[in-house]
Image (cartoon, rainbow, N blue to C red; front, top):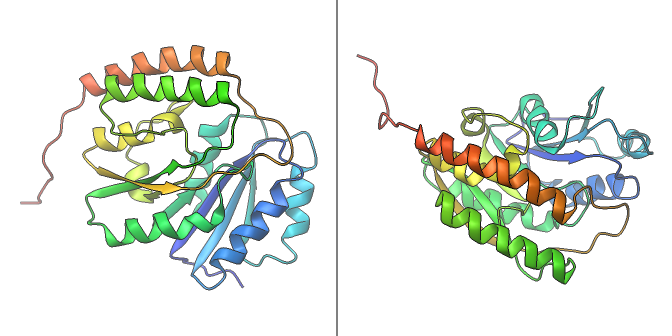
Length: 242
């Protein structure tokens, strides 16, 4: 029986991840079955068998919850839907394609739990990345430019594996592609962000939803927007009730 108030919510957005969906849910559960948790998988209006796979998996995964969008809304909106649906104060998100090893979830979650309340997020940093040389080169270039312009200290913001406090996330401004800038947004809101090395695996089913060219055009406009948001940030240094 699912804990009505689990300590940890795992979120993964999924769009057309048949072949990966149920396998990922099963692997997450095997890692966390001895911890108080729930698994919230968000089906972003898939047109393949993703939803059917997840529904079948519910028979053997008691902590699995499935949230499904009526219309495709993208990865950032699927993550936000998952956070809104989540019942736990701590969230760990990972990509729905299975490339983030669920075995690394405790590494990030335990680091966040041990950190002071001022730490809003502990983000993964992929080691031994299993992608094409061109994709890794483009990512390295993009990360370098973003890090220099936004001063977010993140070497690998594209890593989908991140643990964060739910209440901290809900303070962040939302926009499409928000998930690419979560460390910068956390810092903008006054939170500290930690980083830990995590693994990475090759995709075994389905296809990537992004191209390097598509990422480039989206990132250019998003980067300008993030620079504007940072320029307008003001912090009160905390608050007290008088």
